[in-house]
Picture 1 (tube, one colour):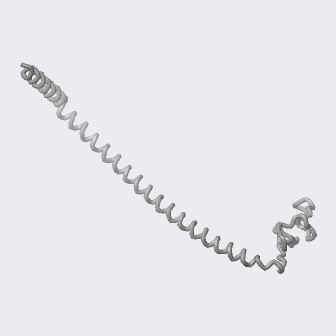
Picture 2 (tube, helix red, strand yellow):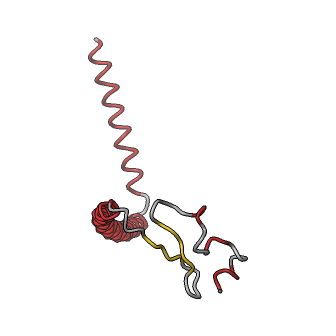
Picture 3 (cartoon, one colour):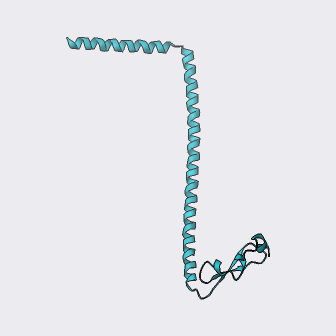
Length: 136
């Protein structure tokens, strides 16, 4: 058999391998030219049907949960893609505005800097004069 040769002649695939039984009523049989294990279920174990029904309901719940996770993952992925596109558009807008601002500064020269400095000096002078007059 291919199964015995690939496993080194192990008795795991042997029908008389009682030490490898996983549960009451279950035993292994050698599969025909395959690496699969076939199980023989003892019909005396009646509670296996209940376990199968319980496992079936758990599989249904897990399937529903997996579908919900998949739906949420798709929603999150779409949201991130939209956010990324919004950020790209915002970066392009900021870049264009900075370019326009630089053009305006170059066209008007540094005249506005002088105006801001003069305005600041006038404001400080007025605050200084007001503080001097309020003390008297």
